[in-house]
Image 1: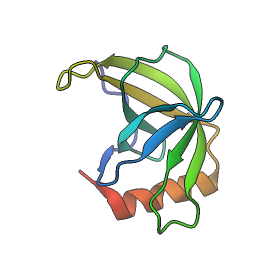
Image 2: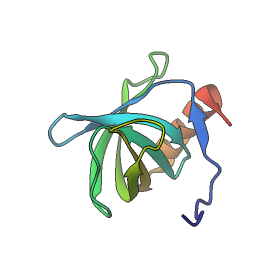
Image 3: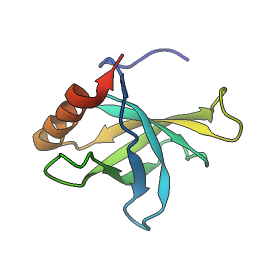
Length: 113
């Protein structure tokens, strides 16, 4: 797969659950993150180009418990390291400066390469 990421991804030392805001289902966990997108590990695949309304858990010391953000599925493939799991590439949509700031704080505190 051709690398098109503009921002360097960072893995998270925090297991953030990702939920669908529409029905409350847990979709998966964040594996890595940038201020422009994320990699989610999930039990079920997601449809390409589908726009998801997400809620992501934030660590307890953050001023809010979660972050609501919209993301588009840009790729989805089976996880070669885990039987039955999927790696799903997400691109954040219509992200505000406040959301970018919160993601940057999360990366500064819990991100590693």
